[in-house]
Amino acid sequence: MATTPAEKLEELVRGLCALPREAEWVEFKQDQADANEIGEYLSALSNAAALVGQPCGYLVWGVEDVSHRIVGTKFDPATTKAKGNEDLEGWLNRMLEPRLDFRFSKGTVDGHAVAVLEVPAASSRPVRFSGEAHIRVGSYRKKLKDQPEKEKALWRAFDRTPFEERLAAEGLTDVEVLRLLDNQAYFDLLDLPPPEGRSGTLKALSDEKMIARGIDGRWCVTNLGAILLAKKLGEFPGLARKAMRVIQYKGNSRVETIKEQVGGKGYANGFEGLIGYINGLVPSNEVIGAALRKTVPMYPELAVRELVANALVHQDFSVSGAGPTVEIFADRMEITNPGKPLMAPDRFLDTPPQSRNERLAGLMRRFGICEERGSGVDKVVSQVEVYQLPAPLFEIVGDSTRVVLLAPRPLSQMDKKDRVRACYQHASLRYVNRESMTNSSVRERFGIEEKNKATASRLIKEAVEAKAILPYDEEAAPKLMRYIPAWARDDVG
Image (tube, rainbow, N blue to C red; front, side):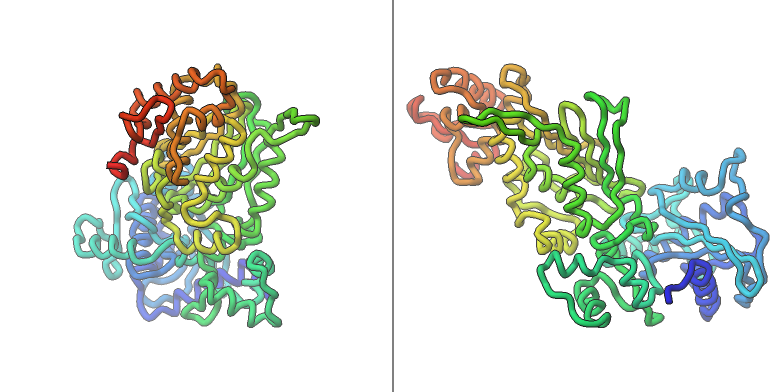
C-alpha cells in the first residue's frame, strides 16, 4: 500500500526526532516564527544540507529543541505574514537567491500540531537570504562569510555531486517507485523486453542510477530517474518547473497568447508527444514539385526535434524557477533553455557538445532521442539549407541560451546579418564535412540560378568583408576560389 501525505509527514517527523542530536541540516522550534529568522534558516539549512550530502534540510515546529519531544505548535505557515503584511511564502521566495522550491507542510503527530519546512540542498552556489549566505555550525546559525573553512568545503561539495545523482524523492516503497516512474517506457525506448517481476524492474532502474536505496532501506528516486521517466513531473516538487513549456502566440510578438501547454511527463517518456504537439502548432507551407503540390511543415521536423532535445539536455538545472521553453510566432520559433552555453554560440556547429549533464545526455542518446555526439547542430543547419530557410540564430540572452528558427523568406528580404550568418554557417558546414564553400554551393544554398552567379559573388564578398569567412587560397583563379570559415585559418596555415 502506498503511504498518504499525512503518513509521510508523520514518518518524516518521527525520523527527524529520532536523530541522536540536532544535526546541522535539521532545526527544531516550538512556536518561534519570525519571518526574517525563517529566511536565514532557509539559507543556513540549504547550505548545510549540501555540505553534508543531504538532499534536504528541515525546520520543524512543534518539537522541543533538546529532548526532541513532540509538544505541538501554534505556528501556521498559511496565515503567518512577513514584513508589510505580505504572505510568508511569497516573501521568502522573493528574498532568496537563487530561488528554492522549498515546501511547507502541516499536520498532526500523536495529536499535536506540527509544521515542517523542507528546504532543498543548495546545488551550484550558496543560497543567500536578503543578500547574505548563512550556514549551520553545530546547532548555531552563522554567516557563511565568517566561516571560511565551511565556505571552502561547501564549494567543493558543489563540484562533487552532479545534478543527476541528487535525490528528487526518498522514503519510497517498491509500489510507490513504480507508480511514480514510467518503467515500461524505459524498456520500450531501449527496445528491451521487460524483466519478469517487480524486483527485476527495480534492479534495472537501480543499475542506471535512476533509483537508489536510502539509509532507511527504502527507495529514493534520483533527479535522473525523475526528469527522464516521471509519469507526472509535478509529483517531484523540485523538478516541476523544469517541464518544457510550449507557447503559441498570435502574430510576431508576445502580446497575445493563443495556446500554452506545460509538459507533464518526463523528458524521455514524454518526448514523442512533445514533438508531436509542437509540430501540430507549426504552420505549414504548400510547395509545388515537378507535378504535384504537397504540404510541408514550415520548419524541418528533424531540426525541431534536435533543438528541443538539446534544450532539455544542455540546460543548467541550478537556475531555479526556470525551465526550457518553445515559443511559436508567425515568423519564427524560439527554443530557450536556462544556462549560458559552455562554448561560443558561433562554434556550436563545429565543436563537439559539452554537457553539464553527461549522464542525462548519455541516456537520451541511448534512448534514440539525441543524435550522436557532435552531429546534432550539423543536421539542424543542413536541414535549414535543404528547406532554404534563413540561417538559424544561436544567441545568449541573459543567463539563457536561445536558438531561433526563422520562417521562409526570399533572399531579397533577408538583411545583411541574415546573409552573412547564412554564408558563415554554410562555410562551416561544408568545412566539417571536408568540403569547401564555392560560388556554386552558395547558389545551391540560396536557390540562385546559375545565370545569376554575380548575386552569389556579392553574398560571398559581404561575408569576407565581415570577416566571417576567408578564401582558402587567395592566389587561386576566380573560377577556382574556395572559402572556409574564419576560425579555420589556423587549420590551413
